[in-house]
Length: 310
Ligand code: FDA
Image (cartoon, rainbow, N blue to C red; front, side, top):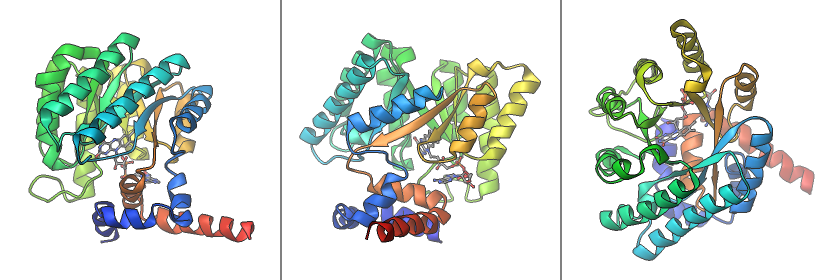
């Protein structure tokens, strides 16, 4: 119930306009979004790299409203790739197609992606296309397979979500193409005719698809904080003799740093997703929806800090 309410609120842009400059809301956001500028985000990446962890930088911002906004967001991604390269950081970038103008004009979106992926190829870098809600699944995969992957192969990858019924078939397609996949459970509100309503089925789908990707896929990214999924991956790798270099675990900035450290100590690869920018509201609401207990925990810590400051 609370999850659905938070996911509903994540789409209410008017509410964001209202809380945008509110100190309390910004305090909550800072737990998951380490900064509004690229330099702040890069400093976080330096810290992660120092701990043996790689990163994926994400400029926050979803569906843009016109061509100018889409082109501006595209230019920001070129800067991200330039700065990663200049500072010699161990990081890649994650991008949402709606932020590159998918809802404005598909050809525009593809043109902007060509510029970004061309720059990534120049640097030998990698860009992951995030997966958004189900109205975008088919379009995102079609653009990826028909218009981007054939040209940029190892420099671009996709995300598949285990809560969708279609994902078993999508994993088979990805394996046939040998493209890089990030597997996550899925963060959007989806109807029961296209997504498993029960967590146990989402988890079973995650384990099933994770195993196929680990065995036959191309360097899958296992994006989860769920210790049961992580243990299942470790056990599967051990039983099938799959080396730790053949896959990576991925987690979100601000979530389960303890597990990140344990995995690194045990010799596994870990990448942390580092979102930054001013458009933090829908991202924050999705994180709260994943674990509503965060709301109470974070409210308490922001209030305590506010009291201390007085
Ligand atoms: P689950 O939600 O079952 O949580 C298991 C446990 O993990 C919880 O009990 C808690 O301990 C911990 N946990 C999970 N989320 C937490 C949070 N927010 N705060 C604190 N603890 C938390 N989704 C999508 O639809 N498209 C995408 O492109 C991506 N990309 C992406 C990249 C990366 C690197 C990650 C880690 C995740 C995504 N996601 C995503 C989000 C993903 O789909 C999913 O919503 C979250 O990862 C939560 O699912 P878990 O697998 O962590 O398990």
